[in-house]
Amino acid sequence: MFHRFFAGLTLLTVLSLPQAPSASEGWQLPLEAASWRTLKVPGARENQFVLRGDALQVISDGSVSFRYTELPRGVVAPAQLSWRWRVDRHSPLASQAQKGRDDRPLAIHVWFDTEGRASLFGNLASLAGRPKVGHLLTYVWGATEPAGTVLANPYYDKGRVIVVVGAEGRTGEWVEVRRDIVGDYRRAFGMSPDMSALRYIAISADTDDLAGHSSAFVRALAFRLPQ
Figure 1 (cartoon, rainbow, N blue to C red):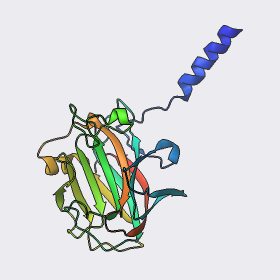
Figure 2 (figure 1 turned 120 degrees about the horizontal axis):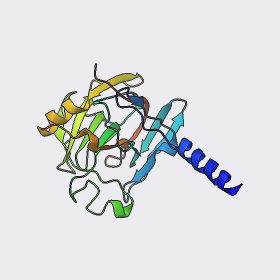
Figure 3 (figure 1 turned 135 degrees about the vertical axis):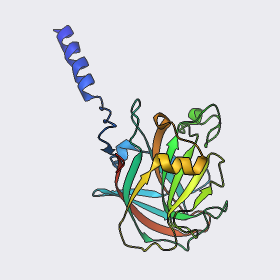
């Protein structure tokens, strides 16, 4: 009896494991809180991340933090990332190149696993419960720089900031975005990425430097085949 019970339990466990999505088809990333973790910035207030229907609202009030998820291991993500975003309220736009003043109402981050010991969050990131991040791309809504501008991350030499929506952006309107990760990586770093090292996707807002307030939404975050 017991051996049948444990056999059945083992089978149930196997069937319950999340199945890695097929890279040939692409997949949508769920926005439910259970699939994501919050990354706090020491000494700063946290943003609020609230699921409203199929959209994630990001409220930032003199605060900064990240919500991130780890991608399935062993799956090479399709090279295109798409999403829809909307900003309803934001503070005066800021330059994304200036350290200590680079506030923005919304950003999507693509984090590649670190090579060697260097990491965005320090050499001992994993011991502190933080993801190991080597190269990274940050897609920004809200900047004084025009859309299409690529900037060095002012905090990390292996990071680049890509302005997707600049001062021309309108509040209260959904905007659909499709980004070629490989092409953006080549333009940012002058080399092709190892897509198997793509490990995390993150969402953030940043209003702690200029004590601003913003409210924004993200939905339909997905990997897709390039078109």
